[in-house]
Amino acid sequence: MKILAIDTSCDETSICISDGRKILSNVISSQVELHKKWGGVVPDISRRAHEDNIDQAISEAFKQARIRPADIDYFAATYGPGLAIALEVGLKKAQQMALDNKKPFVPVNHMEGHLLSSFALNSKGTNPTPSDEHLPAIGLLVSGGHTELVLMKNYGEYEILGETLDDAAGEAFDKVSKMLDLGYPGGPIISEFAKKGTSGTYQLPVPMERSGDLNFSYSGLKTACLYKIRDIKEAGSNDKNWVYDFCTDFVNTLIKSLVIKLENAVDSYHPKSILLGGGVMSNVELRRAIRSSMRKRNIPVFQPYSPKLFTDNAAMIAIAAYYNIKYKPENILEGDDISNIDRNPILSLG
Ligand code: KG4
Ligand code: ZN
Image 1 (tube, helix red, strand yellow):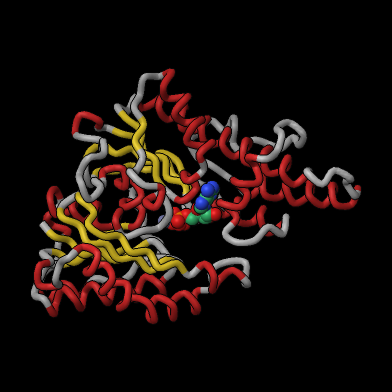
Image 2: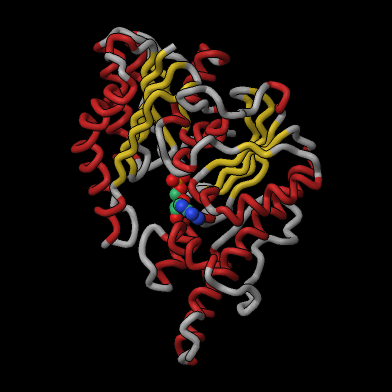
């Protein structure tokens, strides 16, 4: 079963061709350089860049997969959540390709993609992935737009156990990076700086530590960082390493908040495995903390075979399409129905 999947939900134009769960090509054309000088994603620039890059990315994906458009059995695209005018570009392209080739179209929820990213097989099909015996699972999805704990009861059956009440964790990384004048996107930069610092210098509040629910919140931590950084700058620290130490304490605090909520969710719902997804999961220390905690509980932790599948990519969209085709045939569109589906910027998994 050959699937062509497209994701243009934010600032990456990504095209994947898969054979079932096996990823044959996963082209990611990043717009980071275009958005850098604005310190964040500018929707209009994003739309134009998707339009400029998408055809080239599609050709490249076919070339790498050694497959022709006529070989594709299903066309898929993200229809939400994400930036409306960015989503539109990939969605319309995939819908048109399905119509032109007289094939079915699979609309995919971007967060289902992040959740199922661990189920992707590399081109040789050799990596370990979760299987039926690992369900129910709990997914911890941490990205620039979302921070969610999702109970996966079965393929296509999800319940959101907790989510952020304000900013997403990735957003906190990006904003704190801006406060420290470190650049965009903040996640990778702060993660690198954090490795060079010593912990315990700056006391930051662990968000929602004792909230009694499974929700997250990062605006308080962000504000605490803003005041702390202002105080440090005003005091004129002689220690040129303070930024490293600050990043270490910020990252540790954020990790603590995520691990506490994951532990609470696991103790309440007793899942058979944990699925990690989203750009912030690129942080090695975060994954180490989660693995260490789950090892004590004897619960296996799954992550995608490549770190490229944590940040936005179309391989995870192909995987979500694959499971929709297999278990949710009612979601597959054919003929005139294909054009009826529109982008949904606030689409949810629940
Ligand atoms: O999943 P993703 O690519 O896009 C969304 O769906 O939002 O996540 C992007 C987020 C950004 O906030 C970025 O700063 C963060 O993931 N990120 C990281 C790292 N790499 C990317 N955060 C922490 N550590 C990293 N190494
Ligand atoms: Zn994403």
